[in-house]
Length: 395
Image 1 (tube, rainbow, N blue to C red):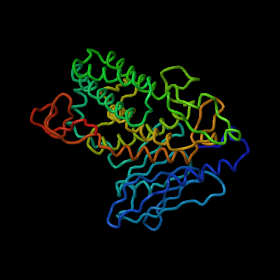
Image 2: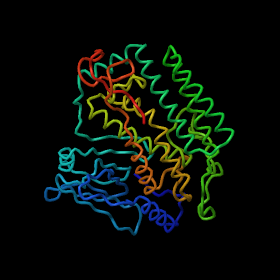
Image 3: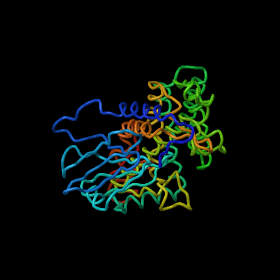
Image 4: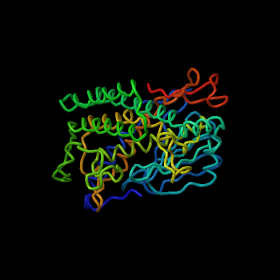
């Protein structure tokens, strides 16, 4: 659950002020047209939230993130255009009834749960396990055939590198560090087009170097702070030096010790959930990964969703970078836990999720052409030269 920690002290006024600020940022800036279907997911957080069916319709109550506060409430009637395309619960506490789950299933509204640290927790969707046999067969065949697996993985990493360059050009300040990083990433992306590594390990090594160069270019981004006398922050929070937590062994991104990493974790949690929904709806097994394949976690780990979200990470990063450039933060936005891990203010977490969801709407997969080793079959026998296919494509 999201809690106010000791680092906030007894100054509840400052906490309430930040609640009001981030709530205003989350408010819709435009009205939905009369005959237009709602396109924005409903995001819930705080204590005491609830979803239940009242008089045949869904009644939703948001949680409390501070006191005093006016709780928001929504009533959704069956089949109406204002029903959100998804409901996202960010940490918080409360209850949901079986009737509410049935109502969501009938109206085809996925329910997504994100933990306090931004990690994807669970999803309830109408897709269930209704995967198409031909598509699951294709996933297994591609994963178990070394040449096909490497070709699939190389295409994903090449697209991720391309989107990293786009994000760097649009959102990162010009600097020698940026120039070097951009040159290195472009060189490796071109190299992947000309020749594919022989092993997955070699390919992952290249991906790791690209990611390292990419986040090194973030080091010149300044974070703007206010009220430092009232809520001081660690000195290293003035810039962003590393994706991995500084107090935790290298190679692990969970347990963020920097505000930027904490916001990225939430954004990626939203991305993996949305990607999993799309794959389930399109008939794939989201746990049967090709690049991400953990033997101990097969069947429980959203590996195929992680495969597909890789090229999208830099595009979702734009949501966090845009927020960094436009917002002025305070220490009250990122309470520090006893182990040095920083958490997001619940209303700030709602805003990050909202912005990330907007980026997630960029299409990941679309129907195109015929089957090739880099494409995903849509209908017919897997691997058939005449079958329709889905091609991974980032716009």
